[in-house]
Length: 258
Image 1 (cartoon, helix red, strand yellow):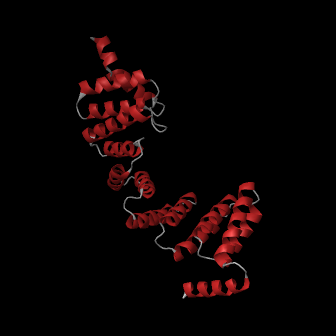
Image 2 (cartoon, one colour; image 1 turned 90 degrees about the horizontal axis):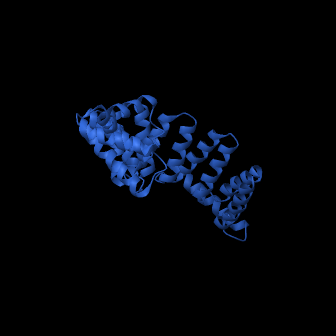
Image 3 (cartoon, one colour; image 1 turned 90 degrees about the vertical axis):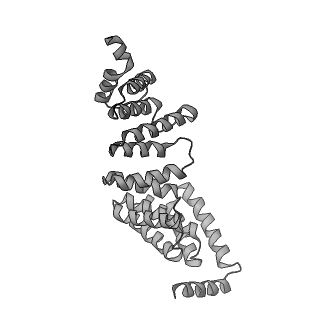
């Protein structure tokens, strides 16, 4: 019934304007985008809202209007706008992802989780939803669920930085699967050596390889990687106590003791 009313509205508007409702809405959207870029949020909002009145089936307008609402402190209006769009396009994963993001910003993680679940049902290879849901489970200490998501993410993510592999390794370590964690940290370190990373530097990866090898009872291999971690120097995510651990168990220190 709602779609029938929308199409009737479009037909009426089309008989009034020289262009089709879709074309007129697109013009309004383009002008609104220009105002938005200039920082004229009032005019941008008016254009977006009017464009949706003229032609409510243009998905990109819903997204732009929702983020404008966010800019002016009306996140709840942004969620309402995206929800209207999702009613019309229930299988659109981008709209669902935008709404999940808004829910996260407004501390409604339970609702965000429902949208990530919906996205993954529609597209099991969706990297962004897997990433967000995996971190939700980590934060909630639901480690087995996090592990499942990061395993799938590691399988499907083609980003050369291998950051998904890092989080999979971290989750394996939390679950005390030290051998498996060490292997995944090695994969991550190999990717950093070849491609670099803006996420976790190579020294940090070496440290976690060493730590997991030591926890798995492989002290000799661990001492080698502790030494590599110390040589790499740049490892800002490591705590002072972990630095002491690296010094204590590194092959550098052990050779001095001998």
